[in-house]
Length: 241
Ligand SMILES: C[S@@+](CC[C@H](N)C(=O)[O-])C[C@H]1O[C@@H](n2cnc3c(N)ncnc32)[C@H](O)[C@@H]1O
Image 1: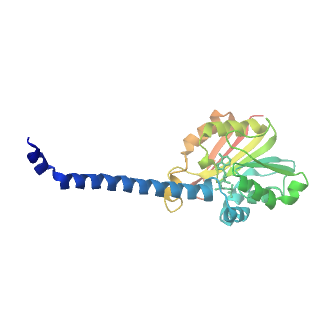
Image 2 (image 1 turned 45 degrees about the vertical axis):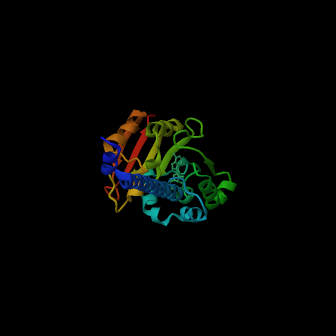
Image 3 (image 1 turned 90 degrees about the vertical axis):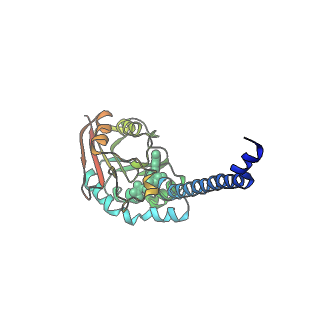
């Protein structure tokens, strides 16, 4: 094929069109990537690792979570001699309820802002030595073995990357006969409950799978129920006595 034949087929204009199309596709890809990273960082900031003044204020009350708190309180049946650990405590709104009944409580959260907010929300109990709140991860709890009589967690487990490690830790820090109550979102939540941007960051499991995590960690009396709605799971289990 002669040079002029080639230019006739592709031509300088044709080459320019191809270059423009490639540049356009790369630019569109970059915009989609930036948008995705932006929404992911917003999800992190609001839910997965909340930070900032708005999050600190919102999670100290967590009005929208009160119904879930009541379901967990109901399942946990706290006793006056309980030593409770809450994992992923956010702004400490649930702790305030728990501390009305139990002897003492500890809580962890991996967000420094949430630790500050939870301490503020439970200031008197912290000052009186009935409550300690520390920064930490659900997969590696900063507590000794068998320190607690109950472990509770809500609206958090779906962000845990290693569920097997987390269940092993819940089991380790519980005393024999200690209770676990875990409130989370069931598999395949509808977009009306969990928008797609949030769902992409979440790990939700079937009843069988989440129940098996608990049983494999060594828990007995494992039950997975749906008290409020089929879209939420509440896992209860007991450390063997
Ligand atoms: C949606 S907020 C819920 C807060 C609180 N439990 C409530 O119901 O209001 C999730 C909380 O879990 C914490 N969290 C998420 N993943 C965690 C992890 N792997 N270890 C410790 N905390 C975690 C976040 O920082 C955040 O405070």
